[in-house]
Structure formats: structure tokens, C-alpha cells
Length: 253
Image (cartoon, rainbow, N blue to C red; front, top):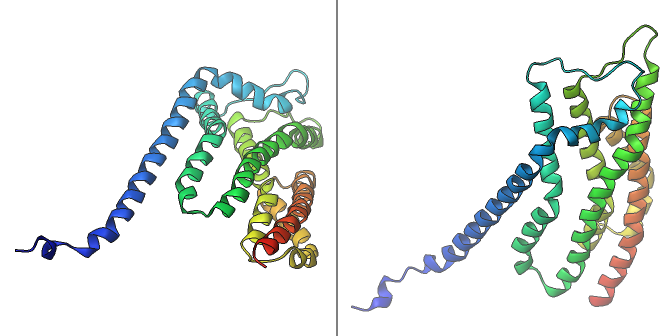
């Protein structure tokens, strides 16, 4: 009996899929392990991390007041939650590297030449967004809230509510600072052109303020502090997108 008669052609098709799924599982496990390693390294300093993050608000509190915890488990769970988020942020370069390593084998060499700078830029811009939120936005927003209250009302923010607001702002500015990368990517993919994006500038500006309204607290200061940088970052993305478009036209005449 011929051995080739028992050969199933579907096996050749399923093997690559199984290999990709196995690699995806391994890389996801590495990501989880990296986050856990960073978390357990930082957990001892959980209260110090919360102290650092809350400094922009605590420094503006009226004399004789402090932050409070209105729930029994808040003194433990709030720093725990913040440390977990901080672990993901610290491990972000490794996480993005795992994503890159998974998709890179399927990319052309010309695509890798532009993808690597975009990957590095995305990491830098994400951290820049977090730094902008902490050093620029937090003092202005918390300063506004700490002085606008009616006379006779003690301003004593709850630590859990404060953390929810801080994480929301961190997320908003971290994502917003990725706009240049997203702009360059859609131009590189041929979805649109720099000229077409420039023509839609009025709609983009309105969209930035709507985005700022949805992702920030209900005050005009934080909305503007998110919307205006988003608009500037969009313009930066269009600027670099012109070079990408010109290079693409040169490579594919």
C-alpha cells in the first residue's frame, strides 16, 4: 500500500495556523509574566507610588485638610490598582516588542524600515503623553477644582475617586499622543493622503474637542488641554505623513 495515499493535504494548511497560535500563546504568556514581575517588584512601593501620583493634588489642598478614604478597603485596593496599572505602563516597551516580534515575520523589508521607527516613536509619545498629563494638566485641573468650591465646604477628595480620574486622564493623554503615529499609518496604508487630511482640518479640530469632552472631567480647562495638543499632534502627523507619502511614491512609481 502506498504511504502517500494516507497523506491528508489539510495537514499542511493547519500546521502553520497551529504554529502561529502556539507562538501567540507563548508571547501572551511572556507579556503576562513581564507584568507580574514588574508588579511584584513595585508592590512594596505601592503607597509611595500613590503618594507621587497624588502630589499635584495634595500640594493644592487647603491647609489642614487631606485626602480621605470613604470605603473600608480603599487604603489597600487603591494603591494596589495603581501599582497594577503602573506595571503595565513600565512593561509597555516589552509588550510592544512582543507584538512586533509576532507580526514582523509577515512584513516586507520596506515595511519593516518604516515600522521600526513608528514602534519606537509610539513608545516615546505614549510616555510623553503621561508626562504631559502629570506635569502640565494635573496642576491646572486640580488647581481649578480646589479653588472653585463654595465657601464653607471642606475640599477633601476621596482617594479612590481621585485615582479613577487620574487613570482616565493618563489613558486619554497617552492615547492622544499617538495621533501622529495613527496619521502616518493611514497615509502609509494608502487610506488617505496628507492633502485630503489637511482639507478636513476644521472637522478634525471639532473632533478633537468632542474627544476631549468625552475623555476628560466636565471642565473647559482639561478639555482644552487635551483638544489643543491633539490638534497640534495631528498637524505633526500630517507633516511627517508628507515625507512618507513622497517616499512611497518614489519606491512605487
